[in-house]
Length: 341
Image (cartoon, rainbow, N blue to C red):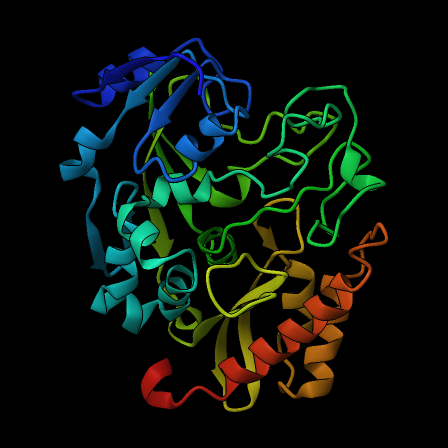
């Protein structure tokens, strides 16, 4: 780990001031915010992230760690821990997919430390990104190339990729937030603003080292998740190489609003297969107004993966992703009324 300056932010304005004019939030940023630190510290030890200043925002936790269910939806503080939210009775009852996505992530120890804000900003698990001995990684060294395209790409993305980067987004919670139309609350040097969660992460677009649309000095303060019938009849299904402490090969966040056997509205997010948290309006459109059976579910999954691009080692992913989504849709449909109402 390289030498760095450590500072603690006493409030949001101080955090924004310390992080301003630095490109904070991007891979090559000289300033990084620290909350739980479960991703940042790992990458600093690996010499992937090399900040000259680390700004600790954990002292803000008392103000930014709340969980509240209102008539408009669910509010989650950015510094709430993963375990706190996963175990919250209102979240488990009204937004089960959120609770499941957090319960299936990491280990008990990490969930007790990691914040929601840090979780949605976690970096890819691509081995070429996390090992600086590989020179060609456009996320670490812009313009150097993407070793994974011709290299080991077993768990790499098939949706939202281009010739610059095929890294997969590794998170779980972000997949649900994208599916459920969540908003991100931000605070920065120019004040507060709201951003659609689906706009938080950038596509590769030739600049994969620019991962988010955070402005310099901006801090994520919370998330707003709208209320809807689909949040109660929802689940998160995660398929992985082993049953615990492993990242998704494919995952699906599904929320359904049903009228008997017919789908009124659907919300679908895909994980493990995409460059960033992935919403699939194409799959949702196939389902609306139709009875949900295996044939309809398969048609929706075909729409979801119509644009998939593979690179050899991940050729299996579109089919695994389709099967995962079919299974998630049929499981969500069959949820008992007591769990879905």
